[in-house]
Amino acid sequence: MSEQTPVFGVTGWKNSGKTTLVSRLVAEITARGYSVSTVKHAHHNFDIDQKGRDSYAHREAGAHEVALVSGRRWALMHELRGEEEPSLADVLAKLSPCDLVIVEGYKRETHPKIEARRVGSKSDQPLAPDDPHIVALASDTSLIGEALPVFDIDNIKDIADFALRHSGLPIRKTSDRAVS
Image (tube, rainbow, N blue to C red; front, side, top):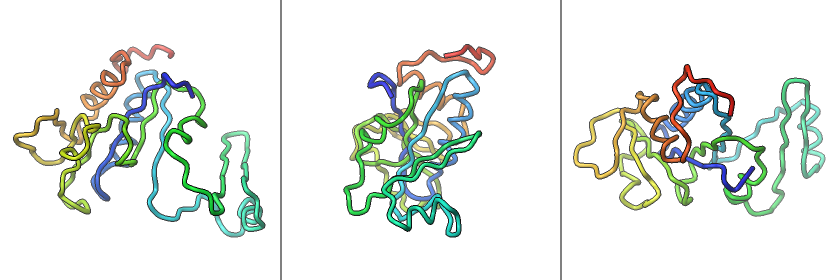
């Protein structure tokens, strides 16, 4: 991935709607002809492989990396095996070229982010006052007196326009499906 590739994030507390917002943004922005990659940070142990599969057996046997390849997709699993978790910059460097990377999570990183807020999330404590890299808010409730731009969390078109503008990419409409 090029160092010039813009990165825009979605952050917020658990159950704030981050994954839904990222998914909807990816759909909207790719419909406008852009290529988008995503990075999601998980705070817990996760597995994309299943017991009983050949690749799982390879990892369990001690393989440092396992690549799964088919005619439709490929994936590379890297076992840390005691190594430090890679930084966001390290992960971004491994991505193929694209027009925009949307990052979910990574609250403490310095890329521009929109904070998702929803009633019923893990916390109602706002993140923006303590994070100068949060550049806008997306919420399912009215937010009065905020200094940052506020979007209805379901207004994907306007949030996508904001993310593209903030990332230095031209605003395209869905019908302008120009190839990047």
